[in-house]
Amino acid sequence: MVDLLTLLGAPRLHVSSLPRHGGRVVSPELVALAEDPEFYIEPPDGSRRIIEDDYCLTIGPEGRWAGVCRLRLPASSSAVAACASQIREHVAGISTVVWNVGSSATPDDLPDRLRALGLHDPDPPMDPVCAAMTLAEEPPTVEGVEVRRIETLQEHLAGLEIMLASANWDARAAAAERMRAEEVYERRTRRGGYQWLAWSRGRPVAFAMADRAAAGLYLSGGSTLPEARGRGCYRALVRARWDEAARLATPGLAVQAQYGTSAPILRRLGFAEVASIHTLQ
Image (cartoon, rainbow, N blue to C red; front, side, top):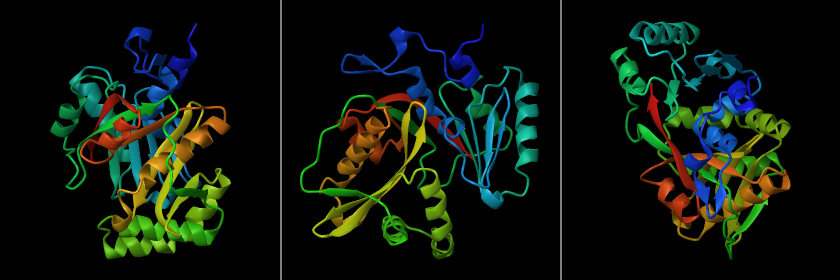
């Protein structure tokens, strides 16, 4: 009989090898969500998802982007090449295609094999390797920061401007995000509206999102205005998303975090690293 984890494509891990939060073993479902979130999260409206034994491919609305994950390829070089060729046929003409190769991907040297087939590490400042992390214990509360669920388009627009101001966005890309803002807000509202603003000193200064899965919430993005950093906004938004996961009766958080930026903060909040992800383009 095939068990549920096999059907879902989750990594088959012995209980002794699973990470722990305190004395609690992290569920393999939450580990799998952290490693291959696009396989477990409902894709955006207008997307197309292709699930094969060897891989999962999500093509975003209007073909603006594509993501490849949960790669489980045979060991032979010809099989790896054939699968890569098949995926490339599906994404022909799409300018942004990201391949996420997790620790459970096969064969073990798959990142190097894909590089030999013409894929490459992303350009800076994106780190080519990040940490898949999970939280299964309640994080600390944060005083002095108010977190509110986003309920209106105006609040969503405030979050978007925080996101754009918190990183070096190309002017054309920023304009495109603003043009799609209403569409994105309506789509996220239909999917549950998992967006929050953190307020400090009377104004919104940080923004965060999450996506729902059966095992918990996946932290799908967050930004804090540079002048508001160091006040606990990031930690408060993690706590808000934990509270939401608990309300949904799935108390667990998963995320992929850059080693040099958010991963150290998340470790201090109790997150455990469960896999490493090689990102290729």
